Length: 108
Image (cartoon, rainbow, N blue to C red; front, side, top):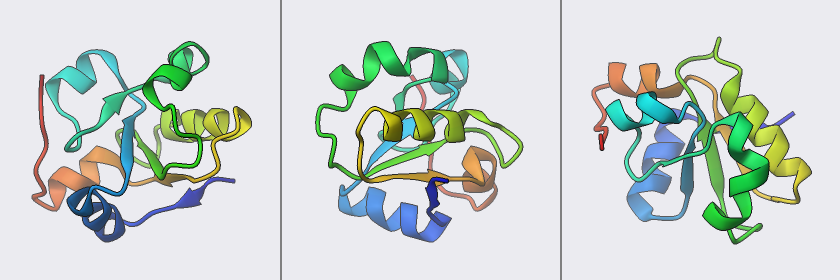
C-alpha cells in the first residue's frame, strides 16, 4: 500500500521544489490541466519511461490522477515501487480536489 500525501503537504513540497509530481492520467488530460511541474506517466508507460523520466530512484515522487475513484495513481505508484523507487506517495484526492481548493494548475 502506497503512503498517502495530503493536499497541504503536496502544496508545500511543490513550493519548496522537493518533489517530482507524476500525473498518472497523461495524454490529453495532462495537456489540458495538471499540477504545477507535473510530468505525464500513465500506467501503460511506466515500464518504458520511468528510468528516463525519473532517474533518481530515491527522490520524493507523488502520483495523482483525477479523484479517489481513479485507479491510475495507485497503479503507477505500485509499479514505481516494484521497479525500486523508494520514496513514492499518492495524492489520493487528485486534481479535482486540488482545483476545488483554488490551487494553480498548468496546461501545455
